[in-house]
Image (cartoon, rainbow, N blue to C red; front, side, top):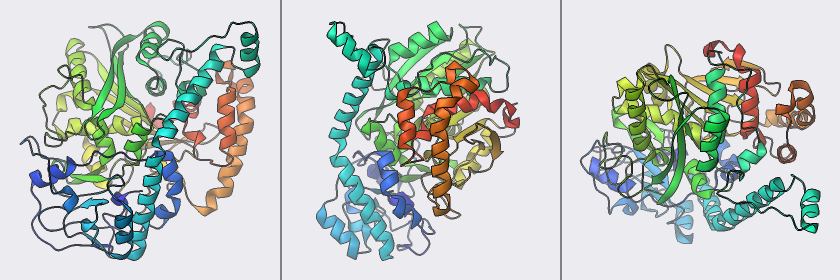
Amino acid sequence: MTSSHLAQRGGSLSSPKTAIPTAGSMLSCLSREEGARPPVLLCYVLSISLLADLGSRRPCRGPRGRSSMAAAGGDDGGAGGFCDIDFMVLRPDKGGLRDLIHLLWSPKVAENAAVDCLAGTEIAEARRRWAVFVSLVAQMLLLWAKRPVALLGRAAEYWMNLLNENGGSVLKLAANAMHGKVKMPDRSSLNYRSCIGLLDTRIDLDKEIKPGDSNYHAALSIMAAKLSYENELVISSVVKDHWHMEFLGFYNCWNEFEGDYTTQAFMLADAPAPDATLAVVAFCGTKPFDTEQWCTDVDFSWYEVPGAAGCRVHGGFMKALGLQKHGGGWPKEIHDPTGARDNRPFAYYAIREKLKRFLDDNPGARFAVAGHSLGGALAVLFPTVLALHGEEAVLGRLQGVYTFGQPRVGDARLGAFMEPHLENPSRYFRFVYCNDIVPRVPYDDSTLLFKHFGTCLYFDSFYRGKVTGEEPNKNYFSVLMVAPKLVNAVWELIRSFLIGYAEGPEYVEGWLMRLARVVALVLPGLPPHAPQDYVNATRLGAASLEPLR
C-alpha cells in the first residue's frame, strides 16, 4: 500500500485552499519519482491489515507548489500537460529512520522526505499515518531484499529448466549425470522457458476453437498473454511455427522513472499483409522474480488526468506504459516514438506507430489488446491513452481488450471516461478466475480510489462462467471467506490430478503447477493467479457467455 490509498480520505487529509499548481511544478515533481518499489505479491500479503483499515477519502490539495522533496528538477516540455493537478506518492527509497519517526507524530506529511505531495498536505488521523508508516517499513525491507530475490529467481528458473531439459525429474537428471549426458539449459534458446511457461507448458492453440467462435478471440488472447512472458526467440517461433501466424515484432521498452527496460510486449497478425483480419498486441505481466516489474505493481501512486474528465490513474502502470518524465506526461507525439535513435522505445508510442502502419497496410483488419496481471493493466490503459490523444480512427478498429487477472487501474471517473470508447457494444472483457487475489487489489470500497470498470467475466473452480459487475469477495480479505477459500484450494489440488482424465491430455498439470496448488493451502489467492486457470476458463467455459457472442 502507498499514499494513493490515503490521498482521498474524508477527514484524514487537510490542506489550505488556494490556486491549482502549474503544470511545470507538478511535472517537475514527477521527474523525481525514479525510485524502485518492492515486490507486489509480498506487499499485498504484508499490507492486508493496512488495506482493511482504510476509510473514506477526498482529494488532497494544497497551496501552489510542492513538498520539499518535489521542489527541484523537471521540466514541462510544453507538450500536453498531464499530471498537473493532484498527486501523492510514497518514497521508501528516500526516507530514513528520522522520517519514519516524524511520520508517527506529525501530521505534516508534506515536510516528510518519504512522502511526495502538494505543499501543505496533512494527514490528521494517527491511524492513517500508522498505515503509511507500516507501508513504508514494508517497502524498505522489500527493497533491501531486491537483489537476493532476483538471484533466487534466476537460480530457481535455471534449475527448473535444467530438469526440463533432462526428462523433467531429478531421477532422470541423475541418470543423465551418471552417463555424462546432462543437457545444460541456454537462456537464449528455443527450449528455455520462463517460470510462467513452466507452470503451464501448453503452447499450441486449441484446435477445437475456430475463428468465428464466440470464445476464439479470448482463447487466442490468453495464449498470447501467456506467451509474452517468454524470450523473443521463443515467441517468434511459437507464433510462426505453431500458430501459423505472422510475427510483427517484439518490444523491450524503457521506463524513464525506473531507468530500466521494465515493459515487454509483442504483436502478431493472423495473416500476411494485405490479407490480415486481426492483429493482437500482448503485454507481458509481472514475472515472479523480476522485482523491476514488481515495482510497477506495488507503486499505488495516482495522478490526475486533466484531459480525461479529471480521472485518477495508477501511477506505476502509466510509467510502465511510457509516461514521459521530461516531456509533459502524455504528449501526443514524441521525437523518437520507436526508440530507433537511442534504443529506448516507450511502449505506448512504439506499439502505436507499428499498429497504425499495420492498419494502413490491412484495410480490413481490426486489432485486440491482451495481457495477464500487470500486462492486463497495460492492455486497458493502452486504449485509454489512445482516447486521451483523440485517436478515434485507431479506436474505431479495436476488436476488443481482453485482460486476465488484471488489478484495478484507476477510479470511477476513469471508467466513465472510457465507457464511450469500450461499450455499446462491449469491447472490454475482464476475466477473473475464482480466488485470484490480484483482480481484488488495490483495495476498494464504496469510497476508495481504485475501482474496476468494464465487463467482468467470472469463473469458479469448475470453470463455470458468469457475467458480473464485480467479482465476488471483491476485496479478498473478508474473514468470512477464509474457510471457503481453503476448501476451494483443497479442491483445486485434487482437481489437478483429475482434470486430465476429464478434459483430455492437454489439461494435465505438471509437478510444478501441483506444487503451486499445495502453496495455495497456505496462500489461497496466489496460485489461482497463474495463467493455467485462465487458459482453461477460456477453453472450457467462455463460449457460453453472452458478451462474447
